[in-house]
Image 1 (cartoon, helix red, strand yellow):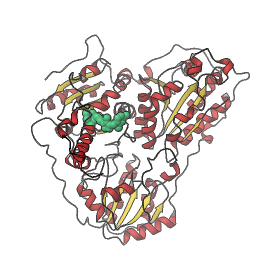
Image 2: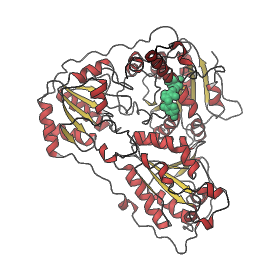
Image 3: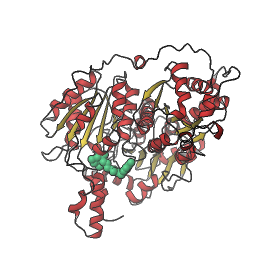
Image 4: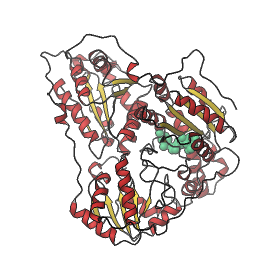
Length: 605
Ligand SMILES: Cc1ncc(C[n+]2csc(CCOP(=O)(O)OP(=O)(O)O)c2C)c(N)n1
Ligand SMILES: [Mg+2]
């Protein structure tokens, strides 16, 4: 084992240094908006968004100056990122905890191009992000030769229009003020998602001819959109559920509210309904509750959960991702009546097919699950909670074999963390949902949404920022491929003293795709032994702990045996508690859980 320490020359970050004390500009003495971009900055302040994660660029040098010298780098405060993808991923992770948008800013077309995958992840995850971008002057006479021309594109919003809720390119400071409020309002209104405002460099840099008068109460331009459950549909659903012998709840996209969590538990107990959850979405139901069926799946329901769904006579989907795919190809068809709670159809467009197949539905309750569940409880009345018909005891989770696997990491990590409240901000594709009980809505925040590898580190930094000072430790388990693509998000966490533990399940491979090559080899009767070619990240092995140390985080490992884990993890956790960003390189054997491997290597489809 080698435990490497931070370079002695670097001071250890102190947990109690507030982020607001970092990167303080000298006072600029600017009291009134004088340029177009000052008005944009003022609008952003009116949204109450506390941070803006960014990577700089001349296309928004005016706006950048306004954030520093007009707003004093406060409310919002900048979070400098080394890549646009991590800027948006950080905002995405923030939203996963808080349910509300953070801002991100990216340079003209090229910065936006870097950001696109993270925008897509946030879109598929239905998470709000207010993204600000810029373009070289729209007025060609104001463009500098060459650079302003390559960094100006007609209809720049088209780069993200297929996977964002709304975009705009306001032509005046007053229009930009309104645009920023609207972007915030739309992003935060369910179904939530990213919005994009493109700030023309000419508009940013124009001098105001007269003082800008912001509306006195910006909140009136962002009225909360209050969700309501349709009573007739709730009554129909309640009737179906009361008459059900084997009701099943598919708990999908729900909020992080504890009250809503308790309501779901009450509903399941009132109905004696089995509940299925999934690792694509954040914790939605206690996974060690006797009514929880199987372990949460990653790509497909585990066999226990699939059996439960197959045998249901009434299914209540709480905005379950891919209801059609689950009921069809994964379960093999059902005879149940289907109640679907969702407003996701409001977001579906012609570009992104992340809306999935069209499911058969008998009762559609068009509101958010958090609204529908209490309404269903009311409609059902007090009634005696039903016994769980076929509740099975939770089996003890035992990793197989002596070689270090992700399952060993999960068990050792859970043990080392003890009773500390922890949020899993991200898990690797190799994660086995059976190994980590989820008992609180913040215990697990769900996946990256869009399957865009590289999102894990940034999402985890954003989530850790939102969890800072909450008493919950942010813990991520990232695949090595995922970590390496998003690795520079670690620097942002280190710079802003955002405590976070990242354990890298380092199988030195893009292993998911080894399984795909294995499947193809089987389908074509070719040697499965060659599945690793063009997939393994070895020779040389990457020193992941050194990548952490190089960015001011603590790096531990490589940990190569099960026996080393408890000691290293104890040190790592202690360091996070002292305020550090910590990365542990766990050199695990390539391999997925049996359920996941079975789904991925079956010969058909
Ligand atoms: C941006 C992006 N590139 C490529 C892929 C295809 N892909 C899916 S999973 C995966 C491997 C990820 O490797 P790692 O994070 O190490 O996880 P492992 O499968 O090894 O557990 C790849 C390359 C993707 N989903 N997203
Ligand atoms: Mg890997």
